[in-house]
Image (cartoon, rainbow, N blue to C red):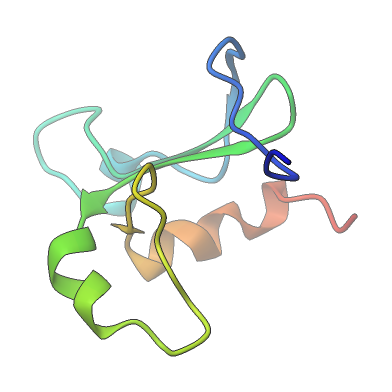
Length: 89
């Protein structure tokens, strides 16, 4: 049996959630990561620093990372800025 959810590699980007990294002071050079995007299918894309190798070794007991997944970190202020763009349901 397959997984109950799979990422759709064919979907596109709909809109940025929150503000850009440049607007939030998370970068000083241009439109680089980190970023949060709603995809056309409603899923969320997170662009951030891959810390799978370091933080992945210290996961809580109830958390695991599949071989095809990565642990990505974004600044707290980026998620807070996106709160107004995230639907309640």
